[in-house]
Length: 231
Image 1 (cartoon, rainbow, N blue to C red):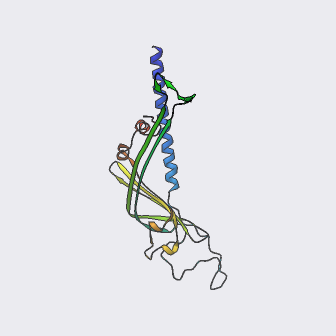
Image 2: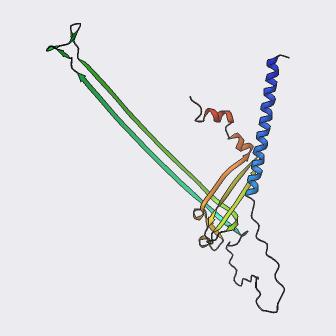
Image 3: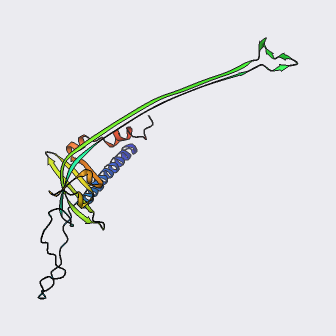
């Protein structure tokens, strides 16, 4: 076996090992990310104290008129996705500059200096111009509903909510995730709130599986289309 063949095999095995390690790291990261978005369970109540013969007991919660809207950790809240944004930008720049410099021939003893019978006058002319234009337009729209859980109740009464929805179709999965802070005053009577009322909202809509991979550029194509490509 030649040295070239040996080094080629070693390089192939190294690349295969690196690819397998990268796939394992990606899957582990996805598992940790999925666990972070798991639904929040309600806080378990402690066992009530033994009866003391009174009508009302301390450390017991009795709600005569219960509000169906989310207000505790683990409660369920429906978020109406009504995202519709549009941005447009246009710029134009035009510059122009012209310089002219004329230098007369020097005089010696009252006579203009001549070279090869010609006056030694000199002139310098320069001109430059720049004309640039650019425009950008972007729009997005996302509608639907997603039901989340209250992960934490803040000291000011705000509710930190988070949740996700998976939809498996044939050989692909569609995933939508949302997290943010909701004011209890913005929750409607049907226990829903518009996504435009969610503060610090983080909305993710993506996919996994065969269909998503088919619509994703490979790492080599990403390199040639990146800013690191000099051509």
